Length: 271
Image (tube, rainbow, N blue to C red; front, side, top):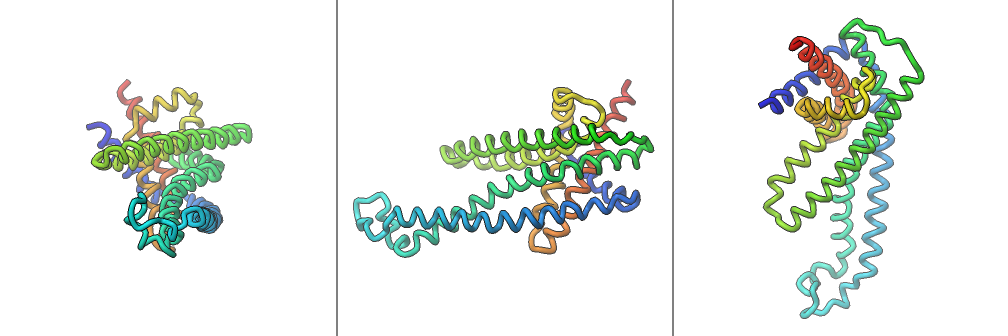
């Protein structure tokens, strides 16, 4: 099946990116995402805690567990657990929800903030791989940056829409989680890969419509690239996170460039 064949090619091309980064002198690009990520992580960590604690305090004041009767109230069954602990339980639930939503949000904020870096890295990777020199144009760089931000914002809105829709469907019919969970995983990978592939499309003068069609036709590549990016960003513990943010974005951007060139070469060979 073409999708899965392209999916594994996309993953493989990202790991080829390690060689390109170190052999072609592009390794300094790995450190810029790390600096930006540390700032975003610290800000989001404290923001989530403050927000969750504030909401849980407000709800615990609104819901007085002592006033819940032992029978006849819809929360009577939970009364023993809620007395003195309602804020604690609500706080935990809210933090889990905010961490899940915040992870998706930070993923796209990172893509937007690092748009100039990704555009330059993608261009530099193609120059190293093909020998073709792109004349520097500040106007073109600005176009790459604003288009990258716009694509990331569009994809974030779409992903949140589908997340909300799948959440509602799963609440209505819980067994659907076996479908909605993998669907959301692949959807998240696709939108990340879409953003990284689009830098190449923009550089080669693809309009938005043509770029969207190109990436839809090669969605397996997009999902594979997005998987590698998400895998590295999801590495646990402090050391894993540092290594992940250093390597993940850089190898995914280079992998997207390798994939774009590979797809174009395949298209030319068929003519």
